[in-house]
Amino acid sequence: MRDYLLTLCVTAAVTYLLTGPVRKFAIATGAMPEIRARDVHREPTPRLGGIAMFFGLCAGLLVADHLQNLNSVFAQSNEPRALLSGAALIWLIGVLDDKFELDALIKLGAQMISAGVMVAQGLTILWLPIPGVGTVALTPWQGTLLTVALVVLTINAVNFVDGLDGLAAGMVCIAAAAFFLYAYRLWYGYTIEAAAPATLFAAILMGMCLGFLPHNMHPARIFMGDSGSMLIGLILAASAISITGQVDPDALKIFEGSTRQATHAALPVFIPLVLPLTIIAIPMADLVLAIVRRTWKGQSPFAADRGHLHHRLLEIGHSHSRAVLIMYFWSALIAFGTLAYSVHSTSMWIVLGVVALSAIGLVLLLLPRFTPRAPRWAQSVVPPRYRRRRPAVAPAGTAGSAEGAEAAGEGDAAEEEREPVPAGVNGATAIGHRSRFTDRSKAGARG
Image (cartoon, rainbow, N blue to C red):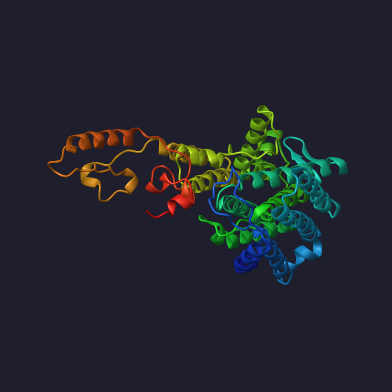
């Protein structure tokens, strides 16, 4: 565990320290695209954050290669080299896209080629555990197609969710943490050496995200761009492929006894098939909904719009930071809930806990629809959004005092009935006063 933590810390440190110089490089090279209609930010922000993340990946692999307990991963398996080859290719395409805006079909082809490069070097799904049947070996073509499909889906799911500051990096970090715990349990608890590469990949992925997040939290100073989102998506998919395709379920000696007993005992082994899908459940749902929505409108599935889940959270009335935290909450609930169920599948408390937390999540989602006003005696201790506005008082003895009072009363009624609007400057919503300005030039104007 100490070697994994050291690798994680080195990866995070290298990523964090390089992000600042990469930001200056992105500004100098003009990798600051104009603000598009679907963007939430109001100022041009440099991309190319994936450059720092890629060098963090290289540093993590280099350190792990020189550690005594992790050196065997490189000596006994070719998977780290396969991962680095595929990551370098997809990262290069991402850098070009951040600078020159490549066509979506070109990026899709690059994703498939990157997956094929990893398959050619042995990082592929070899077999699948089937309940009541056992291990089913896949033909080379079946394994290749399944591997490429999983890589492409994961990359695009992560890329689609990269729409708010810190959202993609935080969600992937949560996913990597859950997957690290599961893979480490297989490697340490069941002494299965084949699970060591997946454990290493998950630790490095956590380090990359943790090192980049301080620069990417709202308001973001730099974006990871496609060079970062496609990179971390590929690494997440590689972790799932490694532990699913390389770990032999028969090594756990669970397919014994009756079919019912074997199926129940095999639940922890089936988690590699389910956990990657649950980890990216929210991005995958966003991807499917986007494809259906755009196809229904007669648009290309790759056409960009403002209909993603994080956009809808802003339209409901959530602030930028709260929308990101809600997405974090649901990702952690699904990922760690599945992980807990794989450890104690017979515990009813886990199911009840997931249900209770889901109810809390639904309340948080609908919170902007209910903005109660605090009583008069609590005005000084509650946040400004819950305070009542004081009516403007006209000077005594003026003719317009009665009219002013009436207008103030109408203003209070309008304040009570107003509805949230999409985010304004720096993600502020209609709940705060900053949302009155939709343009930064207006916000900074002086009378």
